[in-house]
Length: 591
Image 1 (cartoon, one colour):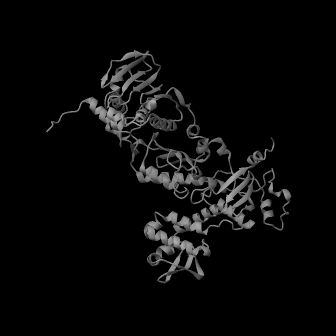
Image 2 (cartoon, helix red, strand yellow):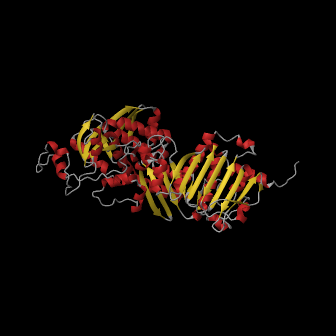
Image 3 (cartoon, helix red, strand yellow):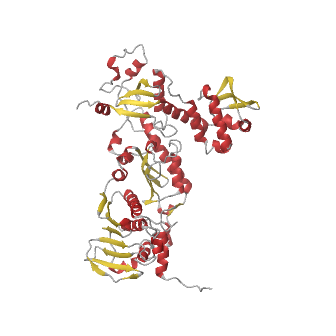
């Protein structure tokens, strides 16, 4: 039997490198975070062959003193914590003292640094666990760390590295994450001699636009709330900007990018009834909280955290983002230009690009035009040019979504406001209105019920009959009264008042299917939104139904009073605005 013996330091560091430095991107993350901890305001990254051949990070931070250079490459040597109390309230990005020692064990490492107190820089080199004596080097204030031939001495691990383009893609993603979280710092990235990113210091919104593009900024709403020691800021994209994957989800805790089940679930829930199908939301969000309320020492890579009060975090994230996504509808429904009753503070507008700040649906169209459309006796008859609003504001502002003009193909409502033309998908808009009303009624423990003078009967399977008998209380809670009248026939004797009688059979079948498939308890809790959304779809006005002008205007007014009316229950947009300037451009007016 083999004897027990201590492992040599080099092997210990090579083992640790498997967790801390599993690929070039991991090394890049550790080095850039060290630069941030050193107070750098300019960080330059240089890569070759995806970071496998060369990975160099240079910064203008405080530097490392000559006598501490070799110590910095030793295992568990750090300047960031000294006691257990320090570990329990870590405020720095790095703290474990493992990364540089692990890199020195699996790569050819050169560390050059200069502090403000030194006349020139000093350099040490590490190879196979051996560290050279400090030697003079030319370097401005700051630190430069260079890694060459990652895993050159552990070929078994190097063969697990992917292709150079793949490794570079991971490095670039790490660079983007860190650049997003520190907009006040300038960053640059070159790969194989080509400049990929050149990011000067900027505002938070400017940095987001530089990295994710203007399209994201224009499709996002500002998020800002502070409560119970938590602060959440950033941008959350509206559902129309949803993605097929999670590549545009950036969540930071105290400046550190993390993947966390609690936060991921809360953010997904905030989008749960406005996101279409299997689409994923997009956001850049920053959560700040006291360091002692989050444990960052969960994994050596520090990409996972553990919150001291995960339930409070979940609730805070969910309600803040959900309210922010509903804010555009509240702003559109505001009766005047006064500040909307939103959770966002005035500072939240700094997150929005200028074009979005300027956009508003408040109109100056007079109520006289609305009166004329409805034919009031004391209102003058509308003249031929009556669809053009006057230039001067009226005494009372017109509704935000304007006035209905016509119906197109029995599908779209065309309306006019002060900005130009509004196009509304009437089925999608009405579906959202009914859905929100059903949710409100359900939460109030009573969806209004409408007894049917003549019950609607339909053929049903044995399982549907059994489900209807077993789930009487749940059906009543949903506004239905179903009763079997034979072993194969069910009768709908009452249904939700918000639904149409013509849809009684289809709606009843859907409800029975949900109750049978998922169980009564789950259908009324976890699946509650999906179930109510299905009912709303059955009750919404159908395409190709001709609406009167009064009905069209009534739908527009209901949209203005409904939260999240910008999207239907499946995340599709319900209306678009075509401005007069855009219409003029289409027709080349003024050219």
